[in-house]
Image (cartoon, rainbow, N blue to C red; front, top):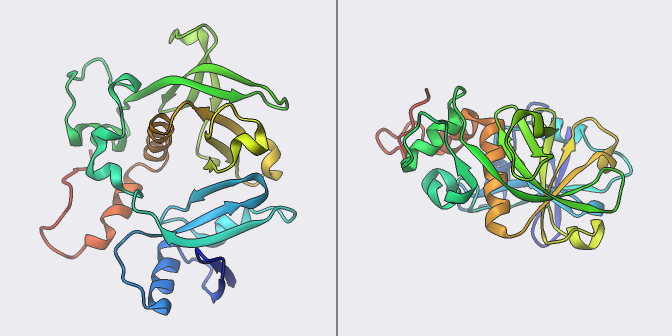
Length: 261
């Protein structure tokens, strides 16, 4: 199989790769071919150009699988560039989850430690709840609506009654196992979003961007919090293994001691 990968300067390189190649392997291959220094921040990005969407492909994802979700008439590209923030939340989780956006299961002590937050996201039995206002684009319409959202293990919900968290007021918005999350790079321009801090969910194996579920936060911190929490919920322990992989085999220099529950 041949894949085409673009660099920051929009020059491209064709690579012949096996079917089961992961995003990390593609990065390693390009680091070798280009004689770059591997500082663990090189990342493969997917860009859906006409819709102004982009996302960092997770290190463990199979590149051929990513490409198999592409729709012919859409212009999609793979980019190879650095992403220093890729695993930043493992080093400094407290800065990613502001107090007013996160609440913990009742039995948890209010002061949750640095690694405690991550333990909760990575364990499959507990979950911190992320909550706050987001603008949602109404399906099939041009209008956006400001709603109170809650992120739980089972998916993303919004309240039909103010900030009520009562089950009867919660309406399901989406789950993440069959869709990928993208950052909106030009949301205001293309989709008429109320702010520049958009993100969305694009179903796999679908008719392209017409099935997007679009959201928009009021600021960068809020968007980063939502997107980080969703990545942790979606990939869990796999994300931590991706982060640790470059350190494997070097005894005793684990950057963070998280024990899987």
